[in-house]
Image (cartoon, rainbow, N blue to C red):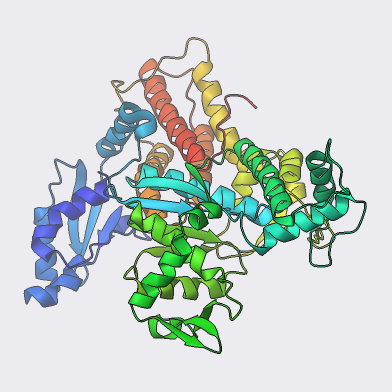
Length: 530
């Protein structure tokens, strides 16, 4: 429990359970290290003047126990707190005691969450939008687990339907030396698929496009799995759409909608009355030709997620799925799962080289793949760069900056801070700091500022989990690196009095623990040497 939580705990009995107690960092040092306006918010409910209530709150704070220098009431009812060096020293002790576990919490309360991401069609290699979804989704899974959620990560393989049939038709055409159909797949990878699938068989023989499509899809899934493994993206399960059809799950989903009165017939087709449940309009779920639309298997899949005991499903979808969200939310609402699904739209990625965008054309097969991107910039840089912006914001990926090894490259800047830390700790004759080290020499402004930021690690993780934004860790780690470099520039760690050296060494070690674990949550390595 950090200082803000402990302060909040001491005030809660006086303000009641419904008042949000927020602690802010004042603009001016003379106003303390932390401040709250909780008295002004709760005074009306208590029927007392705000300043009078603020005085009660100030007296309720256990200043000595929390190593506070002083607590004062200011203005119309602010409670301002000054934190002593002893408290910050205790934070370093805590980090050293807990090690990589530091920052973990029970904020998630063990709630079961399933995160589905990437889920690219098995019709070709993964592109850069899938790469961005992979970095965000995998990091979100790591952050949620650190914050106390029970999380499973899943890739949904669309191995049924029209796109797989078109893939089969495209492979057959290439095997016979012909062009794929106009609405088929024209990339060079299809030529390679044709070579592999038709090795030792006669392409002139009649072939079932569905069967060839499934074979090609399986080849692509294995390629996707291999490049994602290399990308450090792990899934607990690769769930195939064909499993749903084998279990007749789409038909059962339709029947459940019918039982709820959410289905009607019109113009020979079967419609879902989505407009009654929050969608913009009603949707066809079975065409007049008897063919189910994609809404039914997708609904069946989400019902499957719920049936496995998950309380929340988080889907990361591409920028062309905005309309899909309303449809699926409406269908789940109709079946009593109105608070089950959360959707994050992963916006487009624009690769930039030499100040100009790299042109990409899926139709012509000139697609920059995840594998090609990793060859050029590496896993660490790719993942870090994809996590620099909010999921809902389009991202410009500067390939020139990504390859640069300087402070201008943010991942290099953060990794270098960790490398520098490990180099300090490796020096011969340097005292070995540990959780029992005397930290009383720590008190310089640069030392305290670094510790303040280290303490916010758990708070940052909890907030990132709550908002579903692992990107928050990027700015946090860059600030830690910045504070560490300022500290190390201002103060010698080696070659000073032994007690000072050991205390500062403990702070250096604590910063390294937080940096390494923070990078790990992003799926980025914390190198020992660079």
